Structures are given as structure tokens and as C-alpha cells.
Image (tube, rainbow, N blue to C red; front, side, top):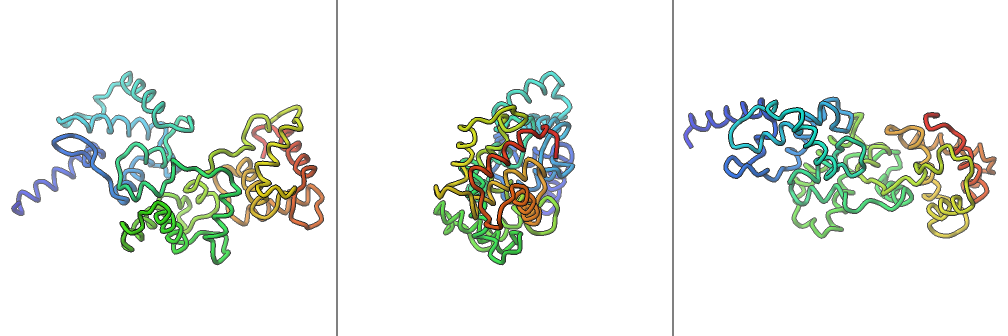
Length: 310
């Protein structure tokens, strides 16, 4: 291709990108989506998550769906050609297929299921293998926060991603440069406050837990908690069956409690302060453990709180 032709092709891509962002990622002949690199996936995410809140929702979602659909046409039609009626039908089908947690918006993990991506990068999202509980999460946190700073810094995140790829027997397919690219991209995606490291709440989005058991309705505004309810929660966190909730079990329980209060933004300092408050509230004797009786007190207090109370 001569320089004039190359310049014309580059200009055409720029025009298409300005008109319909998704068109540049489709094969010009087949109209199928091409496999996205880690950086391209990040570009797509950043383009549509315009407010940077970690979700594609509302008008962002409408814009994405219009462009996603119209970009599949061989002719360059305007995304606005997708009528409001078509959009609503499309959104209904789309959300049923990809909105796994049924919250009416698309998060980074759900988008990763929709778009074709480099296989090795896709593995890092682990959306097919969520953790069973926050106890497991806190064990992983302790393992990779090697300097006990209360954050997962870039080098620690790179070690975590390397081990994930080793576990998937893919590490030999990934060069050190590619691993650095993956680390940088994951930081860009999950580092919501842009401080160059991951705090607890940010890492929790990268490594999700299957369910926060304490979010179940039985623990919110319930007039009565049964002995069976208490036992379920206790066994969920007492993973070693020692008869007390301690160490990572306690941290995992407190993380789940904290998520009910702090929602999407909390760090290790918040967790430590919260632990002190909770443990003082149950009148513990500095032993750093929670018994069945103390757990019952905490859950009864939680049940009496209104759903919006913090």
C-alpha cells in the first residue's frame, strides 16, 4: 500500500471511529467483531463508561447498543437509525443474555463476556469461577499484599496475574511485556480512584465473591432470625470448623458487613476501624475472635437497621 492509500485508509478509520466507535473493531468484509487486545478492550470500556463509575448504564448503555448493532451493517448507517422501539427490544434481549446480576447495567465483567478478546487476557477476569466467600478473598489478599501496606501495588498485581495464568497453564504463552500490559490494563480498569494501586473494594471487583450472604433479605429488617439462619452464617465463615470466627474468617465476615455500609468504596483502613467498632460493640476481650453468641448479637443489630441506614 502506497503512502497516499495508507493515509486514506487511516483517515477512513478515524471518520468511522468518530461516527461509530465499534465499527473499527469489526472485520470490513464479514462484519464480525475482531479479537480485541487488552488495550483495545480498555479503550472500548473507557469510551462507553463516560462518567467512569464502573458501569455502562442509562444513556451510556443506549449509545453502546445503538453503535454495537449499527456497526454490524456493511453500509455505514447512523446509530440513530436504530429506533427507540428497536432499542428497547434489543436492550431487553441483551440484558437477559449478559446482565448476569440483573442490576440493569453492564459492568466490566459482563462486557468481557460479550466482546471477543485475547484468550489469555480474558482468563484474568475469572468470571466463570467466582470465589465461594470473602474468607477466600481475604486469604488471597494477605498472600499478595506482601508488604502489608493495605493495598495491592502494580508489582503485587503482576504477581497475582502471573499466578492466575500459571493456574490456567497459560503462563508460557505470555511474555513479560504482555504481562506488564495486562497489569497496566487491569489497573486502569479497576483502579477507580486512580492512585496507581488497588484498595480492598477495587480488588473485590477484580476478584468477585459469588454472593455476599449478608445481603440476603432475611438479614435486613427481619423481625426474627431463626437459629438455623444464625447457624448458616456461622458455618459460612467458620471455614475450619474451630467453633470461632477468626483471622481471615473474621476479616471476610467484616468485609461483607462493611460492603453493606460502605457500598463500593472502602480500603484496609476502613476495615480495621470497622473491626475495632464491631468488636468493641460485642464487648470482646481483645481475643480477635467471634463466637456464635457474638455473631448472633451482630446479626440481630443488622436486622434491626433500616435498609438505607448506614
